Image (cartoon, rainbow, N blue to C red; front, side, top):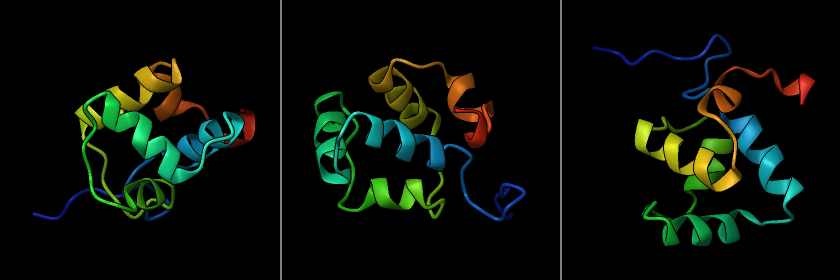
Length: 85
């Protein structure tokens, strides 16, 4: 069974918001990954890039870790249009 995609064909909804939040904190993708690994988010190199580009599905556990790290709600990551941020 095929996985659902966002209306724009991307594999996740949160990528643009993750990029914006990361840049607001002055972090590189590698730096963000290092900080997330300290919270138990263990993943391979380049995962942040693929999330931000919408090329990777995001699990509920990863969504929770990202929301916790950025001190935002799940709803904020999922529902707030990027142009309203």
